[in-house]
Length: 214
Image (cartoon, rainbow, N blue to C red; front, side, top):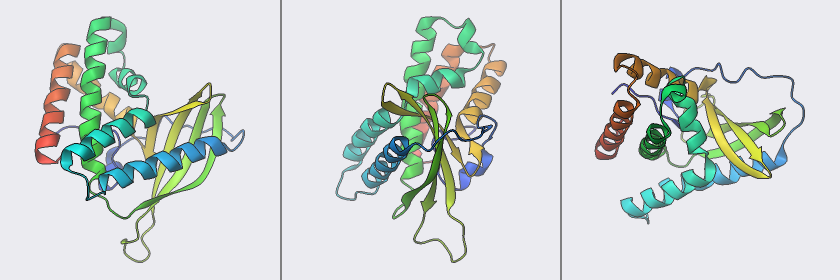
């Protein structure tokens, strides 16, 4: 399968790129953004590791969680890259819906691989007004002695006090940029056909849901 996940936490993180987070000097810590990330990500882990839920219940609750945590439309349009300028509004809307379906499938499959981990916020900074970075580590109680915890950074936009995650960097490697590169490669091979990309994402999502594999 050619895709990388939007929200992979684990060994697949090493395939992703870091360029989006060229960090400036921190302006200030952001306790509110830190609390947003801490509370919501732990909630997502709890949902996916709740054995009392049926598969359908788990998927439904996790979709609701992702909708609360992330600005999937903003992320989707970013990953569409230059094709956004030449596509119609209808094509963009169709792509956003397909991307959302794909993200739900991938996020769920990746997080379902983990149990017992906890997220610990280690700091934050304001990159620009309303643009904040929350640094965390994923602590695994089952990790071998001496193994370092996985570093996970969340880029958070603050719009009028409402927070949303717009990108994630896992172990120093950026997720949104990798998706953009992947999609740009597909479009280059398919005459810049955004509808074909949307169909491909839905096929990828169906494959993930069926097999649990990315």
